[in-house]
Image (cartoon, rainbow, N blue to C red; front, side, top):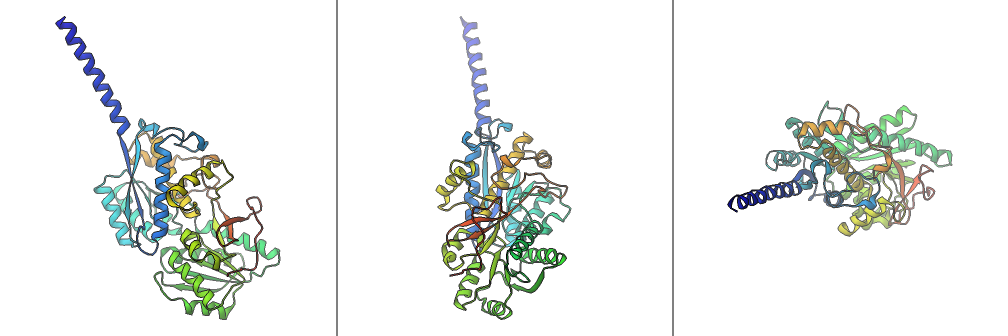
Length: 417
């Protein structure tokens, strides 16, 4: 009886240890750092980005088989890590490259994150990712488009979004189509803020356009934190360009729209390089004054019942807004990072890095309209793609180009208010 009792106790102990091991695996979390502007001039974009990543975490940590072939949606948690849950540590970069750099350092050394995500503004992604490179931690950017980010010889930096050169070619082809349809596109003005994002994107667009015979008649740079753009708008009014391309963050984009109305200036055609013009807060604030503005995008909500439609509904419950192109690109980047961690079956940075390099996602595995996700030796997604959308009712952007993705034809001239 005594031996039988001891055997029973040992068996119970073994079962207890086994259960404890199972619980430990289930409760294991994978910590990822996300650096975004949660305060400052770009706070709206940062807050929407945070909501996008929180929605992605919900999809990853809980089973969502209704989301089709989206990686990580079918199971609860990361199957490659025994069902481990994803935990995101958010950090506020306050719109400052120095703060973003310090937050990256804190997340790596104190929070012990296994990877970093962010940081919206290219100038901050530049400094934050340099810290990740120094410490050998994977950094994935889903939305920063400055060309310089993938030209530094970094081994730990990856980017899923199309970049300035991709969008410049889209603008070029779009304007050629518009000209073929009778629109004037001979003289183009670039209006851009003066941080890494604005200057680098304007430089790339100018280079691509000049190579293809399109004239940049005017290049207007302005301070990203300006509170007065009257002189810039008066300059545009005086020079009368056929097309204006705006490269602006949210607060300055809103300021330009209000100033154009105040000075009664409407360009024949206005295009935006995403960023501030995609922000839901701009549409709410001045959408009725910016009717007809074209924008670039890689995202469409999709028909009812589709995976992107269902994800948008989840996001809308959290944020109160529809997914815009920027927040969708942020979400897509985060999905790609987590997919790599899952495939790595490890939280070791080198194994995550190797999994990122081996990424080969197909269109039906994405929420974005990319041709897939596959990284080159510089860490750039070579299958990124985009389209042109237009604010046609003052409240919603609709795809208008190319024709195979359009739900409405482009409307000209720029209507404004």
